[in-house]
Image (cartoon, rainbow, N blue to C red; front, side, top):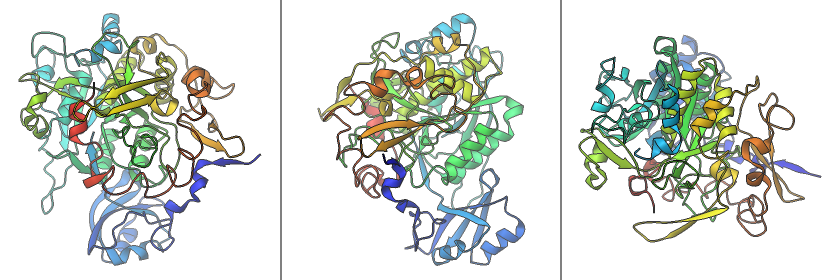
Length: 550
């Protein structure tokens, strides 16, 4: 029997760019005079290493010690020469990243957690986003003056130095995310829009501008700061409701390498999956569209559900826009779980362009309604804060494993959604590439006491060419897997992994020639073609995120 890791189906071609050098990212633009690049070295670069890059015309812009690298502006013709430097491991462009509660909090059981006496107090959550506007929900009725205990700006404006104090949210995205984590819902003297962990402390690290855009280097620098401030503010969680398309394996991607350093420092990293679940431009029904750094197996990647305006998750359905796995190139099974992210009401920034330019989504002076996996991720970040409030000794792996094991698996086989603008009907199938381990259940996670010493990396999907079946591969020391701690059936549910008509049902989604065939998910330039999904570098468009679905 021949068994193929799915990565090999494309012959490793994506890594061979610029004349066959695996050190140079394939999306480096050689048609310009100069380009900003992130250069990763085998070890932390010395002055000699940096001078060698300067010798090729490189202009040093910033250190990126978290990824053993540096940010340079390089003449495009000089890029090929970098590949010959044995001290350099990888060169990639400084890519653009973008930002992707009334019933939301109750739907996942956070009210139960609050009744237990857990509200995230003492737990620091780093919000790496567009900044945080300190609304009444974050400043009133508290023992401290504000929930935001630290704020810093990492945006770089061309020709200008970084103004670290310019932390105001000019977009609204970061404020909305912050409210989902830690808003107390008191702006209207009610708890209707209360966040998941209203007692948590917030660390605002601004990386997105007033249009919701930023760069890899800004995010990497913000992650580094979160690690440096970990002990000062007890930062145990990083929320990344942002991302960009996957361009290379997570083992090379500088964003993924940065989040792995945060994980190694004992910080739980929560990332949004992306909002491309409706995209069928390559006949994949939205599969293979999870964004970076949500493609990294060390992080908790979150897709979005619809709470249907009810308390409890028993009737929740997947939001059709939620991106699906497996991940591009590495074929990691993502998302890890799903949480409410459709038409979520949370705090707005009075300066934010997203809310001010979309007045139809303004709920009141203080609140704004928006949809996306950007909103689902902070629901999980708040849940993690509650778990760590109860048991501060939990490791990132134990947190992830408990959340996935206790996730609700009460879903239908399929569901449909209608675009409220176009009237187009979308059908979603409930498999592990769509809902992961299931829907967040905070009460169940808090009541779980299982432990394990292994790592809870998201597994990889492999395809057996002879049988046409898909199975899961776990690395050594996994928390789950056959006979280790928890079996696949417990984490993902037998029905989601092996049920008839779910992963490889005849003629459903996984028939030959659709997902696993060459030239569909696994080939270059098909799903990721210009102007189809990733136009202008924006991962999830405002139109989709704002409108949500019926």
